[in-house]
Length: 552
Image (tube, rainbow, N blue to C red; front, side, top):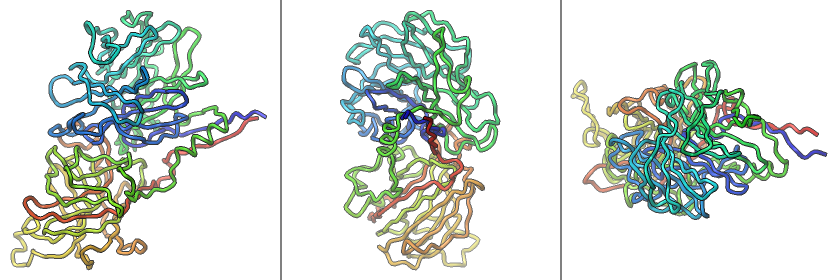
């Protein structure tokens, strides 16, 4: 009997905000890094045994001393990283986009793929999207946007000689994300062109020398989506990897718009395509250069079963009972120092003061949306000390777009709210706990719902939000026992959180969901204990799935 199983997997393989993938294989293991921009810890690392099932295992940037995200605008920070393996170490080079002219490319190393990673070594100040190519003659090179190549010292400590622009692409805008591979004596240079939106594409050239001259592929672009009615769009920014059986694959970014040329609420995601080498040493990607909705992958049955079991987590509830936060969590920039801690009972945050609209330290803790429809719930125990303190659920795009569903201590001007002059004859100052839902857009916070909670201070409460994929509406509910829920009569269109609806800074990230705490400056700080947080997709039509069919 033939033990080969044909499996069909749906794209994307990493749904949600996972742009600019870079992948390597070390033995039977694959490791991938993606962009995280202003979020910390930064540059998320995933592990896989089959290129389809991925598990987050850590971050490259875990200390503020490695890279500082304070005072940088939204969608700046850690741009497209690259991971490579050389001399028994893992090398990740990160373009630090800080709003100044040019970009600072910094390399980090670790003995293990999950880290910890070293402090960074600055390599140059040039264009974005650096990557490292290790040639078979022992020489090393740094490639970066625009099709530039610069020799890299073997120890990675500096660049040697002068940079050369070896191939600038086919004429598309913003040639970036260069990756070099060598096969059969040919150096292949991949570039992303057209910008990271609907005109995105992947192009290819080759040369007998790393320095060129390069000849463009006759099939350029080798990957693009030219049919606006297809569900997979924005394909580009790819990197090649060879599996242990000699098959080649490409990981790349893409997006799934709700309508042709429309909004992509899940942002830029990671996709996988099969690669076929032709007899004349060129390559073909996907379905004649178009991204595939379904990937067919021949697999040994035992390996497939082992990989899936290893990387599957059936428990959607995070009880914050580990020594560290799960790798799915990332703060908005750096968290306030000494203002949160993991305890035996859960994640405790102080109700410390910070501005929502300034690029500084926060207590906004987020994870990615992974489905067009989802449900998220937090159980918290709120013990405030000062009027105006708040804690709860967060739906976040950037400083100019967020939704806060909170338990707050008191309402009125004393609690930090506006005074309504049209109701000057009414009492507007009230103590006690309130459930409040605010929409914050373009630095202006508007209360959509507010109700008194008959709940003693320090009692548990469950807050839940649900996004319906069919309507794009967010709903809310709460419970005082975790079983019976009170629906709130409020529906909020989620569209204002989509990346396309940015206000000031072009948004390269996607909406997130999470938890937060916030207090009042110069006042005593209360605490909130988050006992659990759960996330689950409720949109089965768009959730990633896989089918298996055996051929004998």
